[in-house]
Length: 464
Image (cartoon, rainbow, N blue to C red; front, side):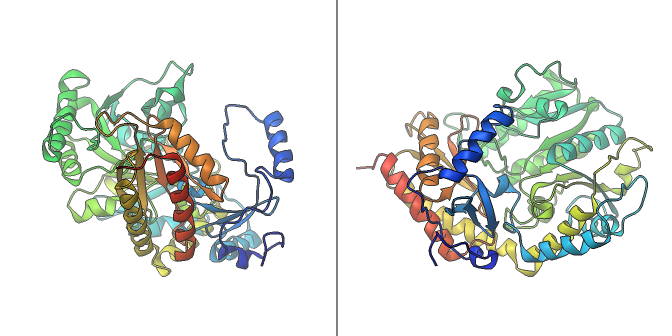
């Protein structure tokens, strides 16, 4: 089967990357990209010369017939891959009945069934749980803050360096990278930021244990310097920072945050927008916390919840939701019936196909290869993550750890020209993130590693 022949979706799912046009973008893609430049704001930036035609599993075919291996997955949206057949079937069945029922007006059984499922699987403190749905990750975080404030009757929220929580006005302010908020103020009051535990860039000469203690102390100091603990509604963090550079929170730090919250009546809230639904080797990264006795009070998630359909969820114990009076939460499209049907099918796929186990396999195989490269090339400074959510930090010098942002930009272009789509992350854009769909085959993984390895070899400096 050549790249010039249109593949059926089933065949496409198992193909390998192949570029058949002389240049990228091809003729048809170039025409669409030209239209893009005239029709939408330039601030919606895109560095990839790809106009998608169809996709299945971990493979994208563009409008010119080029095939790409997708290691971005809509930035964590496609843990079960593009167009999983069981999700397609569930969506078709729901569309035969009705598209939408606003939960404040009509009761859709799909909404209730999905809420029941989330109450069963989401690791938050408490026996009886409740769930409601919004549309995006930012909406979930914003609603999570509302829930925390309503329950505690407190105004303030602590967030962290490197955080990314969304692009609404509140979540933009909660997000650390200020390039995302230029000219958008004034911002809401009550958001205070402290240092996130980045062990690769910890204070000089600290051991990991000393660094964790240092980062814990930074939170406690915030109660003296930024806001009294009695005024803090929630401490909000990502179990593995996404845009911040795929930095996992050390479990001892999480335990300390849990204790601080318990001692001060603060809600511990995890942002699992990107880490949820199998990405970290468990259904949620907070499942690791639950096992360690430090589950969150509120968990917010989105992205891979519905296999590509817009949906997000906010989950907490019953007691916390009793702080919400009528009218404080809701929304026209939150919990759309088609999205809920897709989410129920997505969760079943993750469970039936044991994709949490597959996440661990993919992450381990990817990490092992990168660690081999780390021994060969001086620009690979760190490889880290959890399960199938792995980040590789590129640097100019191993002593100074100066970020190698330009190198990563070149690496992205080198890879896409050869059929592999990767994306950067981190404050300085010098981290390559691994977000391959969990249905990626062994052959596809090896093909992607070969492309990435060749690009690293072409761009990086070999160690003596």
